[in-house]
Structures are given as structure tokens and as C-alpha cells.
Length: 117
Image (tube, rainbow, N blue to C red; front, side):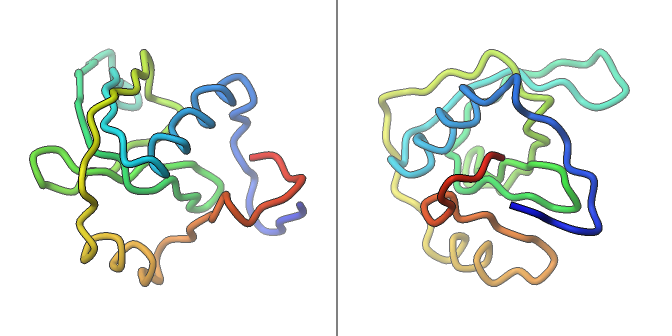
């Protein structure tokens, strides 16, 4: 896949986590992870319901909810990813908002064949 105009971050070292997260999104499985904010040493634990992996300006983001509040996380700052067997019922309004947002570019991984993220 060729994309012009952006320099995409290299997530090849986190491909296993990326694939596991994508599967959790498709299966509506809750996840937990540690998140380190950029340019700080502050790490926080999160348990969320994942909705989508998005690529905006070459950077991968995870959109999910924590206690029914929408949150966005930079994928490369996620560590210790754990997939729960606990399922959630997706909020259809949030899913539609993500699909319709013109400020984000959603990668639909189900329709990408032979390309690497």
C-alpha cells in the first residue's frame, strides 16, 4: 500500500499486540493495559472497551470507552496489553460517530488484503 503525504510510524515491533487488539475490537472483548503519556514517565492502568483502531496523520490511535466515557490512546504508548474474556455491547451511536467523523481516517482492517500496518 502506498500512501503519500505522511510519514507513517513503524509499528512492526508491536504487530502481535496490534493484531490482538484488532481481534478484541471485532469480538467486543474488554482490554486492559498500561499507558505512558508522551514525553513523561507517568504511567496509568486502564480497563476499556475498545471500539476502533484509527490512523490519523500516520499515527495509530485506539478509541474506546472507560466507564462509558470516550477515550483516545496512541497505540505505540500502550504496554502490557491484556485481552479479557469479558464482552461488552457496543454503543451504536459511538460507532456511527467514529465512522462518520471527517477528522479521522479509519482503517478497516477486514478489507485490507496483503498490506502491512
